[in-house]
Length: 222
Image (cartoon, rainbow, N blue to C red; front, top):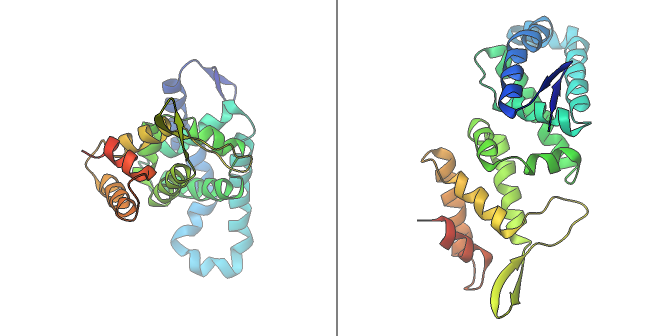
């Protein structure tokens, strides 16, 4: 799939990521510096007098993010805004604002285009975002737990299998996909890995012999 950013076209995901990184360092950073960034050091003092000024720029940034979510091609840019390195305070604040905006949209539209696109991303990319942002980590873990808990136990040719339920209101995942997400989350020994292990241990402690969590833990925990 060809990806667009502005009038530029990119053949690969890596090319797009590089371009988004440059965009964050230049245009987006300049935009933020002229707007919210100037008020951040004196935010409390300025809110009463210039609250509308802050709201104006946050509204514009929201509009940009909303526009990017209108097509599959530009949705990729939203994800790259989060995985790009934040090498300045301004870029970091843009990412924080973008993440909060994205999480609100995900919670409001559980089966919207952004949610479906997000779960189509490689687990390693989602792990990178989760390791950077604790709020996304919470959303990611809770969503995986919800997807796994919604699976139903069936038997095919006397073989046990977990089946995905079809939902019109939220994204659901196949059992094998849930396993892959958990395996990737546990692939690096860091705080995120520790959090996942604690969650799985807690879930396992309260389940029966035929529970989904016994099967998942037996496959992902060494």
